Length: 222
Image (cartoon, rainbow, N blue to C red):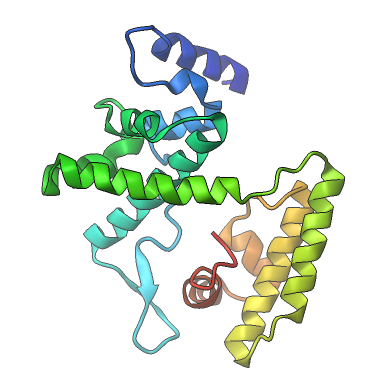
């Protein structure tokens, strides 16, 4: 279905004055995430696995733990969509706690397990983090601006000490992501594990280990 048609359908279904969902104010991709959840698994990477005690291999997380991490990533992504359009924490709360919104399942689960107050506290914390992230993100007016940002990031990456074999592997992965970002024209880009591993010249298992042990904990990738 064309993006514009899909967005129109969502607006028709959710823009009635008595409907508090507020989906019609979001971009279509964000509205899909709120309404349908993470159908593609985009936010699941790493959620159901962890670095094993040997520091090399990956082990499965307990299912509930992995599901909670996946749910939190979806929640944070929704908050980061709401913040730039002038939304509020109340708007985010309405989106997440609406009974028909699959994207709010994690917040619903917190409310069921720990009570409504705990769920509202959680949503406020997510909103605070999203608002800070959005407020400190530089707006890019052109592709040239994006390339300037990427060039500065490449300089920072190349001058950072990457110690040991894992550090050198992390550098190769970051260079791969920079290549994808330059092609996409900005920091936000999409690349599968297979594409990234091939670009970096490593296995997918090694790629996952570097994501979980170096690049995500140190804030290089989200």
